[in-house]
Length: 378
Ligand SMILES: Cc1cc2nc3c(=O)[nH]c(=O)nc-3n(C[C@H](O)[C@H](O)[C@H](O)COP(=O)(O)OP(=O)(O)OC[C@H]3O[C@@H](n4cnc5c(N)ncnc54)[C@H](O)[C@@H]3O)c2cc1C
Image (cartoon, rainbow, N blue to C red):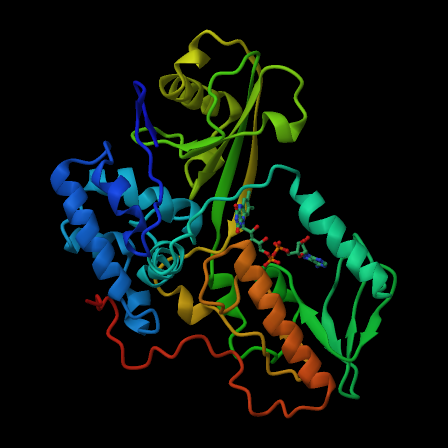
């Protein structure tokens, strides 16, 4: 964890069982004062005791809950947001306490090694797309790429027709795994009691900055930044195949401000910020600088989101929903998407094998009846 001026601290686990595995490095964490560190330990304990099933957690922001426990703005920036921002794609001040509790409990407080950081050393297409395609082809699946699905309609015999670029295709069951706003537009009328809820899930942007220097400016494989607009930075030199120099990728989550900034403005803000973290960058020549922007990278993990997420079942038998945005209890992550895909496939297979569909509570979301808006859980 780097701060401008070369102040560095390290958060690493030891061999103790969770939630003690980070205790020793937290006790030495230089970006917090001694009293802030003690308070953070108490707050982590309180966080571990929250009941993730309690619907009241989805009525509060993580930031308000932290403030009630006396966490300073400095502690939120130097510790809590280091984890909240990249996992929830929103800062603590805007994120749902329910999803924050999920991330911190599952990621940090329940298993010693759950927060070990892995990152792809190869392009994600090598890791996800190609192996999946190979498995699908091997299973005899007809894979159609760049096939834009249109509206889904019942065929009157219990199956479906999906409009496509070259005519419709017929299906006995459908797993619709597109982003939420798109899903709402493709579903047949009546498939969800309230299709507008999918639009109301909202969106949260991610911006990645790609910065290539003519020489190495750091030997860290990745780092987080404190007191800097840089959030997390990864060395992509090797994975990009760059022969000389260094390729840094700066990953900006919850990037509502940066998504609207022009390349020059981003350069002006981030090059000095990188030089403040990596003094070697001051003398290095910039070879390339560009930004990639995902305005709708994830759904907005704000309070109330649990009510908007829906399970895999729709009201249309055999037509199921999948995606990181469905009601997995997880934030928008690859793991959430995979979990959702498995649940959706199970529902589709059950429908094909003739299981009763009318037992379902489609379009459910979490039942928040009786909750007072804004109630803050203890
Ligand atoms: C820049 C960025 C960085 C991220 N970093 C991480 C990370 O480090 N770790 C992590 O766990 N998660 C990360 N995420 C989030 C993760 O990628 C998503 O949560 C996950 O990919 C969602 O999977 P999904 O299957 O729900 O949706 P998607 O991956 O969005 O897939 C939906 C698919 O539907 C297709 N589609 C849309 N409309 C149609 C149509 N009409 N017909 C046919 N196909 C259609 C789209 O082309 C798309 O391929 C990141 C996301 C972004 C944008």
